[in-house]
Amino acid sequence: RSRQVSVLGMVAKPGRYPLDETSSQLADVIAAAGGILPTGSETVLVSNNGKEQRVGLIGKNFALKGGETVYVERAPMFYIYGEVTRAGQYKVEPNMSVMQAIAAGGGMTPRGSDRRLKLRRATADGKWVETDVGLQESVRADDVIYVREALF
Image 1 (cartoon, rainbow, N blue to C red):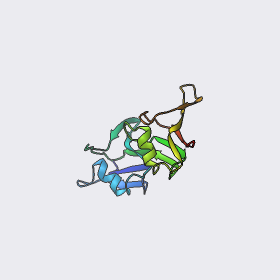
Image 2 (cartoon, rainbow, N blue to C red):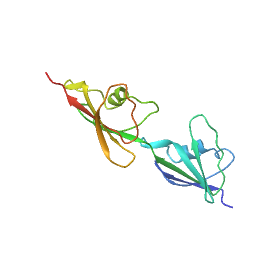
Image 3 (cartoon, rainbow, N blue to C red):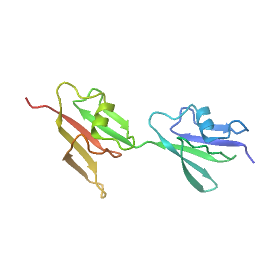
């Protein structure tokens, strides 16, 4: 049986990696693959013969077996644009607020207003709803935050 694992998805160097006594831990194999990309998730999918298991990387030792496949999924992302320094897509962090999302985008420009924020969020049926939002509102995957210009 093969003493290799496949590492796929959001890693720097996807491919097959050998297992030995010193590098059979999930974190070691991901490190050998160049680490998780900034857009990669901290939870990975480990599969073997049709059985799948989700494993969180932080604070866990997880031994891999030969023939397993490790897939690093894309992390949940949010999008921010308008009067922010660096508009773009960013990783949703646990318990992230709109204020933290704006900070991830480099903060507001001098023309931005923290009282004129809009949030576009998909509903269960796939439609988009736009609402006014406050700084303490929670951010979810695929949210779109628009920082509008202040009225003077």
